[in-house]
Image (cartoon, rainbow, N blue to C red; front, top):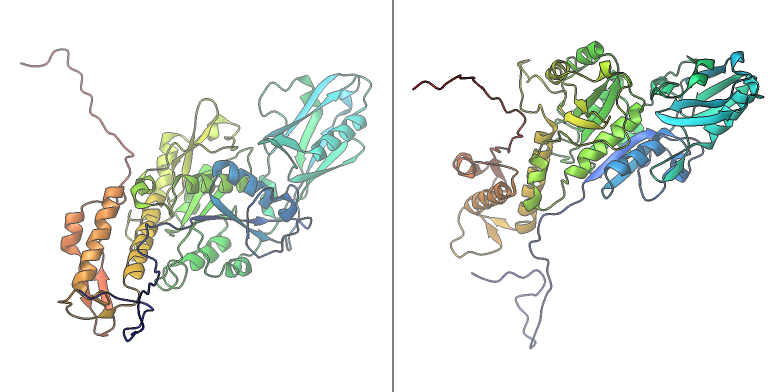
Length: 502
């Protein structure tokens, strides 16, 4: 076998020692990025439709209390060390949601504590017997605008409070229909005290409109983002995402090979969630169904997307690939509160139906901790309209992303400047053959089997096809990948005997 050089010429005759330094084959590693898409406010310095990495406090970039600021904070809590990016959107057109808090005159002469919950975060003020209802409204408005303390920092609410006599008006910081999903409650816990009877909460102006994503998505260029988290689960947005990530001309196409999965949350009734999911069919989208929750849809989308990203590093080494195969069930969501009413904690029957209809679900522990149950995609039917479970679960999609990238790195790293021949009897490192490439594919598969990503390497080797094309410069390969599955169900037949038969 001859030694191949990249830079030392073969006709060099001047003595004595020459060395070129080249990179050898390195272990597979690569970035696995999370992208948060949401609205900023005019107070944020970041330009709209331009991705920016999250490093430190997102407030100066995205604006105090903005949707994207909250998404970044909640995502970081669920993925402390991952690479997170933000893609800010301008509010654009549409109305801004308002709510009113009316303080009744009966509070005069009373004393105690008055509380309100915005997005599940409590604001309390002291009430003196000498306070009028207008005084109480003024104090409550000021307390809301001071913000709340969470995750070791002072944060601003996603609403701005203003007061007129005895009425506090809460105006969402961002325009759009999602403002109507912001929870405003006075009785979240149940031990708030007798003064709660004097506060009346009502919806005011309804928020309208959803930002368009086309320009923002185009700004991503060819940068890879494995997890794309956003609170927009309307049909128009999902259709845009379907094209953006599509297998024909989008990020999942063989030309782009950028991949990515869209994770969003949808707040609606159980029946509407099931109906909506059954009308979608996209393997690159997961919709978390929620009936209601003190935590907003943008917090949900950021938290569960980032939690999955933190658990499954698509850029990690192959000996850790088993983590990608592990189911996401039981992963807790930091900072997310369950629906206020236990009636809206999906039963096992409801969750099973949602999973049949392409809607992801969660479970709630007795202490109120929210944890992922099963994150399915909306894919249900093949191209003939027949049921197909190939892309039912997000884990399978992530496994395939890792497999393709791992194989791509090996082929491009070892054979990037090789000649192609039918045979290589001298073992020339500058020549590759289909036999060599087939052996390399088997070797890669064995590595990933040892890492816990795939299985049945013997069957893979038998079914693998690597052959030259009619184009003399091209090699075609058929790679039958048997991914490791997830342990989800243990079904036992426990039969009672008063005495075993002899």
